[in-house]
Image (spheres, rainbow, N blue to C red):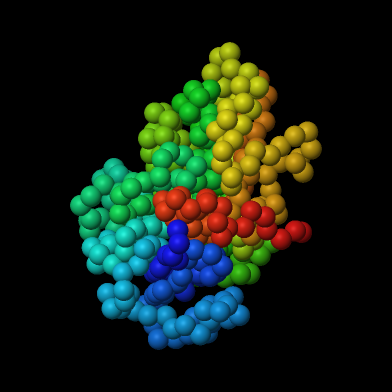
Amino acid sequence: MSERMRVAVLGASGFIGAELIRLLSGHPQAEVAFMSSQQHAGRPLGQVVSGLRNSRLAGRRLRGLEELSKVSKVDVAFSCLPNGVLPGVLDEVSGQADLVLNLAGDYRLRDPAEIAEHYPESAGGWRQPIPYYVPEFGPRPSEPVVNLPGCMAVAGLYALYPLFADGLVEPRAVVDAKTGSSGGGAGSAEHPALRYGNLRVHRLHGHRHAPEIGQALGTLTGVKPDLQFSAFSLPVSRGVFATAYTWLRPGVEAGEVRRAFARAYADAPFVRVAGGRSPMTFPMLKTVVGSNTAEVGLSVEGSRCVTVAALDNLIKGGAGQAVQAMNRVFGLEETLGLPEVGPWP
């Protein structure tokens, strides 16, 4: 593209919104034209988000969402609004943007009963089908509104997709996902003293990412497995580590599993297959936090298959994945403006 794209970040003061601004401010083809925060409207970005006070955008003022109608139309609006907010304003937002990338959970699920259970505040507000898009799986969408996956859900998908796409495992799986404290959002009420040095249960049954993973696998592979999904809280600020347990079909060998993963991610610049004889070669948070890269690894013993995936929940599980989707939709280099590696150690 010869001209820079104008982008809007809705919900800019949250963790994901702030990470989007950080990434977009260094994107060679993007210009942040609008930033909203209902709670902090009128205040400079750098006063609200301490991590961005040295950004060149630090002096720009956050605006109320209703002011989006007062600016020129943007190419992309990234919606990082709390669940339930976008459905009430989506008509107005889509009228001001050629593409709306939704990072919240509002339209991820399609089954009315599941929506009522997991996102009751999100029903209604849009009459067209809204695609669920993971950049590594399937063609780029052409619809005006696109949903992006949840952070723990996409980690689970990276760990499971090759197995079900190639028909290698029985149609059931157990996934446990561990997430850092930023996964709870900037408004989390959990005291740091309860999180620090602690590993605890977040939710063993009924987590909303369970139907999301099942629905996505059904759409992408034709298999909607019997899925047990449990979530746990890690004493770190960033990162998701998901472990998936599956059972190979009779006659399936470990080599077939390794080849399936290699094929699935051969052309995926941000998903790397890691693993070897040493535990240190398997996915870990230290090698992905601060980057848009997800690592996956696998181990097979007999009929039992264990796969793992690690990623940064705010980047590959959120803002970075959204920028990656924008790059693909507009025909830009997929890796443009995105970090492949984070700090070490």
